[in-house]
Image 1 (cartoon, helix red, strand yellow):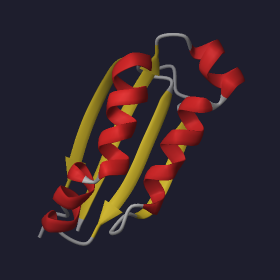
Image 2: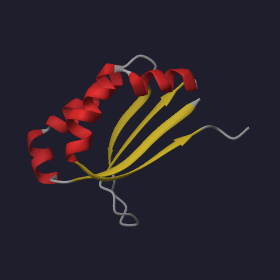
Image 3: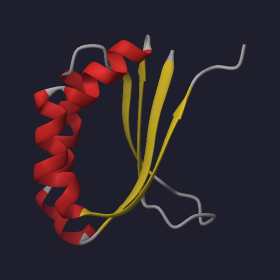
Length: 97
């Protein structure tokens, strides 16, 4: 199992929240084959600088790689992520054995 997580801030948070284009497009990632337990989150702690989070799971590395290269994901990154995200931290986890 791989848990893919990303914490991020937006360049223009107010605009993105009002238009919802970014988050509408983000939620479409949940429909990519192999994605499980998809969550789009609002960060509430004052212990870091990020405003939002994204979390999802994959059964294995092959499904995660297919997600990364899927046209829906590539389109989201090129159209929304690269233009609207100010900063992010991506962490991918595997369970300890």
